[in-house]
Image 1 (spheres, rainbow, N blue to C red):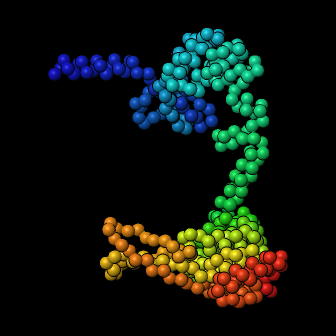
Image 2 (cartoon, rainbow, N blue to C red):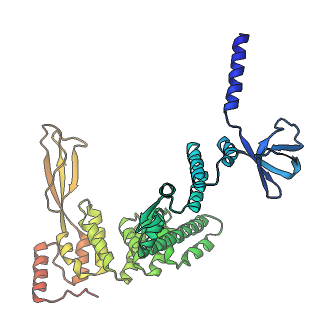
Length: 402
């Protein structure tokens, strides 16, 4: 056992000799710094720091002048010892750069490669290692080459000048939007506090277009009806296309009729072809429901845009298929929407479903037709289509009824 313990002790001593010593950086209260190795590490309580300097000297500092001590990587300690062994020549600095590479000291390696170029600007190995390449007999980095072509770098990507300007503008806009999101949240939270009137006043006073994104998010998610009505008021007052989009979405999807109609009240005052197109798109969506068809009809009736008459005629009456699986019973029926009356459902093996087709008359769509044209052919799609074709043949515009 004694022999084994002796062998182990000898192994630890041998490893300690091979392992580079860790150094320290002594940060002084005056703002200075000293690098070296702490000699009196075991002193307790500490009254002084005895420091072995890289050049072989020794320095003793009073403990009161040292703010803190930071450890230095062993490789850096070793580097401080060996770097003076290499001459300040092209070959010597290249060899020292290789030593740094082998010891994972990227910053120090770059320093010595740059020193090589100071000694010999055309040293090819150092140039290539530092990322240079010859362009028209001139050494250039990738950055210099791209800049010479008129490109600039943004978020790690090279862009043309105009693209960079657009990127910077969008970055600035996004930063402003984020600030408004924070403000709106703070004021919205205050609505639930002790001074809701003051919070509502601040929300209503918003007039910066950069707040549109934050207001739109709140309009979609806020559970308080009175808060959503404030957002609608503010978005409408901005009278911008970007603000009308959230209002159009709310007019279709909000669960409260008062909120939906408030959006339509505001949109009706601000003519926007994009809003009409949105409502038409919601009506024509293949996944739409009968309720959404009628909401879109109400919305289009308020917009009074004659360009949507063809769509309205098409959706006056819509077919909805009910798929009844064989066997019947509870849960055996599946209802699907099909404007043209076709369709079917998913079937189990050897099942023969029965498809029952229901046709629904859409009051919201009819009301829109009457509001736009001033005529009423009821749900007779053929009569509406004939009248509309005649109007087009005459070249007579369909004037929206006042």
